[in-house]
Structures are given as structure tokens and as C-alpha cells.
Amino acid sequence: MTKKILGTLLVTLSLAFAVQTHAQTVLPLTVGPARQQITINPGEDTQLSVKFYNQSDSPISGLVKVADFIVDDDQGTPRIIENAQQASPKFSASQWIELPFDRMTIAANDKAVVQFNLKIPADAKAGGRYAAIYFEPISPFAQPVGESGASITPRIASLLYIRVSGPITENAFISGLFAKSFQEFGPIVVTGQINNTGDFHIRPRGVFTLSDGLGSLVAQTSLKESNIFPDAARTFTTTLGQKWMFGKFKVNLTASYGEKGQTLNNSLYVWVIPWRAMIIIVLALVILFLLGKALYKNTISREVTLEEELSKEREEIEKLKNQLKKRKD
Image (tube, rainbow, N blue to C red; front, side, top):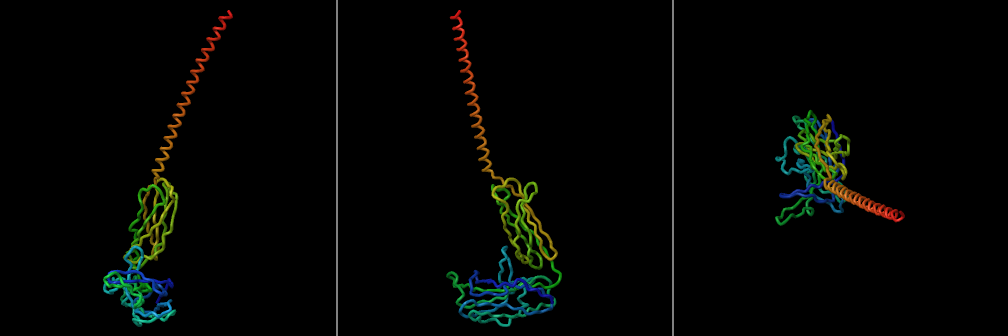
């Protein structure tokens, strides 16, 4: 049996649900590990454990349960499936987990350990299965909602990612790459969406890049590494470039995923033209040209006037010279 347990984190994952609504409520509890990932062969079984820590000065009693979970939004938020019959048989794992008890009390400033058995059927198909081991405190943590009398029950959960050994299908694609096709100023806000249609969750690695019309790299940002669960999508948003840009730019998303390093690629083009600033500059140039032209005409006119005045003065001087000459004669 090959077993890999990754991501042992002591963080709080508070899941709260009601008949008509759900929310997150802060509990004086933490869980460890918050996530476990295990690879196991069909027909094998193993024991795992989850620790719930009570950080308050009072004991906390509640229920211990197991349920399937899915991720059906584009932000990677896990959602507990209350009814096991509503879970997809392809990814359900709650029926493979046997808990030693269904309720417990965690002493003040202490921890409680839940050791459970995971048994994989011999005919289990290869791929990903997902379940959550959670602790649901009883009152006074339940919170009323509205006037209907419904209440929100906060929960803290440890997520279990199970990989059943065997050949699996790894398939993903970029379902969308979005940005404004024309904008006045940068930076360019880019949104990419990756869909996972395979048998196991993936964690793509990649980059957003921005190139100018000559193909030169202008900017790039790394894709935030996040899990994308089967039959789910994840949205990634980033900004590229500076405020002042001009021309046609190419936005590209390149990523790799899976054990074989399969690649994803998509691109789009964006025009960035600060047209109002350009209009202001053009108008300023026109005004300067007209002022210069008017100044030039005014200067030429003055020179012509001076020439005419000088010519008249020369004529008068010549007349005076002629008159003086006649008098002497």
C-alpha cells in the first residue's frame, strides 16, 4: 500500500449549514490536519486520525460525523453534502469510512483524537474520492436565523482527499480568458477560468503574460496555485501592465497540470489607447501651431510696414537732397 499524507496544517475550517442558508461562524476550535491526501489501492484499508483542539476554557460537546463534500463554485469553496444519496457515486467516499463513535466532549484547553478506518472496496475505480470528518458542537453555538426559527450550526472539518490507485483520466481546458478588448489606460485586468473534467483534482502551474505588438514581453504574473476539483472550474484574476500604454497587446495564459505535465494555452488581444490624452495633445499642438502661425504673420506684417516706412523716408531724404542741391546751384 502506498500512502501519501500531505498538507498537515493546523488551521480552522468552519463550515456552517442550515435548511435554507449556510454561513461560517468562528469557533474556539482548530483541527489538524485540515487536509489529508492519501493514495491507496483497491481492496486495501488503513487507519487515519484527526485531532480537534478546544482553545476555550470550557468543555465543548458535540457530534462527530463523516460526509462527502464537493466544490461547485469557481473559488474552490468546499460544500458538505448532507444527504449521502445526493453525492456523486463517482467521487463519494463517506461510505468507505467507519467512525469509532458519533459524539464526544473535548475538555477545556485540550484535544480529542478521532481514529477512523478507511476501507477501499476491491472493485473501486481509480480516481479521486472526497470526504470530510467534522465536529458539530451543540448549543450554545447554534445561531438563530431570521424569524423562521431556523438556526445555523457551525462545524469544523478535516478534508480527506483519497486517490484510488490505477490509471486515471487527466483532462482540463481553459474555458475562458477575458479582458476588455479596448481600454483607455492600463493596467489590463485579466480573468482566466480553468475547468477540470478529469478523475482527480489538479493544481495547475502557469503564468499570465503580456506582450506588445513586436512580441516583446511587457509583464507577467504567476498563476496562483489552487486545487481544481473534478467537474469543477476555478477562476483566476490578475492585472498586467502599467497605467500608460499604447498599442495592441497580446494577453496569454499558459499552464501545466497533472502527472504528465499536460499544457494549457489561450490568448487574446487588447488595444490600449489613451484617446482623451491624445486629443488633448493634438489640440495643444494645433493651438501652438495656430499661435505660431499668427505670430509669424504678425512679424512679417510688421517687417513689411517698416520696409514701407523706410522706403518713404528714403524718398523724402532724396527730395530734400535734390532741393538743397538746386538752391546751391
